[in-house]
Length: 188
Image (cartoon, rainbow, N blue to C red):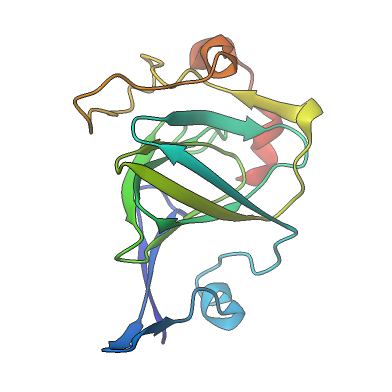
């Protein structure tokens, strides 16, 4: 198999590392192969690809979509980020829990976050280019979020000794304990 799949502490969340073949000329790696991903229960149909570039200290998240809820296969093509998934599926044994992983363009590792999760990342390198495949299209009318520093979830973002750069919009999210996540129940 061309990939190593490591299921995380939350069922259905995976770190995926491709096999890389390199020599003095450069390298080759498969970054997606439907049969391998399907054999681990990871969706193989993606309908939207996104890319962002951010500078060191940028913290994006924690975002989710109530309509057109997306599973995401994320990776960095340059730089390093700390990537976080938060389970917001009521009734899940891991509801309100989070897992985080460092994604590194040198390692070429990826993170699969199922539908029914909030997602965010923090840039650790001088800059990072972040790409992700989504299982559904983006719907701005259905977007939502949790504050990145929500005390109920208590994500440990302490990866940098600098001030985080967040958007004004991310500073206006409703706290975890004051939200209804009924929309996410169907993703159990």
